[in-house]
Amino acid sequence: MKKFLIGLAALVIIGAILFFGFVATYFDKSMNTVSYSTIEENSRYDSLSFIADLHCDMLLWNRNFFGLHKYGHVDLPRMQKAGMALQVFTIVSKVPKGINIEQNDDKTDQITLLSFGQLRPPKTWFSLKARALQQCAQLHDFATRSNGDFRVITNRRELERYVLDKKNNKQLTAGMLGLEGAHCLEADVNNLQAFYDAGVRYIGITHFFDNEWGGSAHGMKKGGLTKDGISLTRKMEELGIIIDLAHASVETIDDVLRVTSRPVIVSHTGVKGECDNQRNLSDKHLQEIGKRNGLVGIGLWETAVCGTDADATARSIRYVADKIGVDKVCLGSDFDGAIRTHFDVAGLPTMVTALQKQGFSFQEIDKIMGGNIRDFMLQNLPVE
Image 1 (cartoon, rainbow, N blue to C red):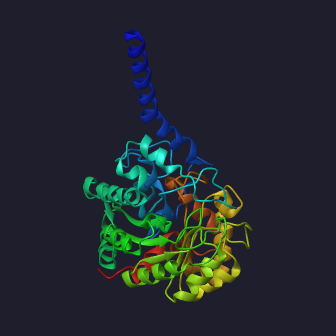
Image 2 (cartoon, rainbow, N blue to C red; image 1 turned 120 degrees about the horizontal axis):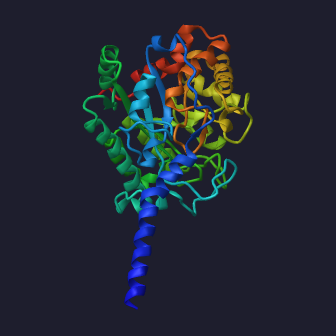
Image 3 (cartoon, helix red, strand yellow; image 1 turned 180 degrees about the horizontal axis):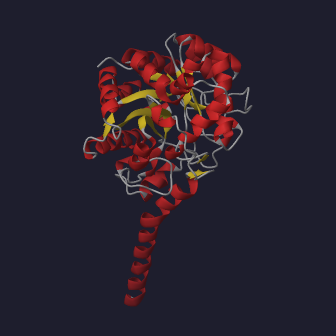
């Protein structure tokens, strides 16, 4: 019996080492892949004034931010190599099993096991609010440990200072926080203040399932804003938190646009005019977002743009620019979103070539590759 118990204990220890040491990293490596690993250089890339991207889920993976990796899409060395000025880091707190773009319920969650496997604090295993706030704290910790190479931007004054400092220090880079789905507010609009205090500056009403605030494009009912969702939208306006319509149902988008006249974003998407599926924006919604001086982030993955290369993304960017203006479109990569992107962050020079093929001038490319995000945030972030 003693030998049996010793053997059982050894098996448990070996299993724990395998699970905690390898499984979480295995999922990161297998899910966050690229179509092309070769970086296509472009002579004009280094002349861009401000390189930025509107959506990245790197915080989900507990990857060493300071190490150079051969897997995944984003880390500090690759951001610096790309000359990235601003990357918005978005927080994923719940994802159903069997995730798809057509129809999902909220009964299951894959992130609980991932959080456990990554040895995140126990409070994050069962509380979506705690899970999301821990990811917020993680980004601020990166800034503290970066020796001044990385900042977290939360307001216009910080962004103005950063833009000036970035011109004199090419290695300097920055992040901002967004929330992918308001379900982590745990049905209490008062929890919005905690996320504002943590630095979150845009929030998507829904993610892959309907929630207490509104309907998802991928939910079971796909309804509009609930009564509480209307209250949430108005509270976000009061605090100066930008509304993200990515993943929102048609009815939710319509309701948000009725409730607010302020600029909104769609952080990572495609357009039905180039890639017609449940995931993407209609011309009607493009026009309405454009009228409000909003911003549309075009993705770097196949479902968004019906293609696996930079040319596919460039075609969708051209479509948006022609419909609502070149100053209202940008990159919304969805880096590290458990998807295969065209390339990782270091491959961004490839986009310049693809945009040149679409006939954009260098001044227009400068806007698309980050200038529009900079200018939008300078207009819409809280002043201080």
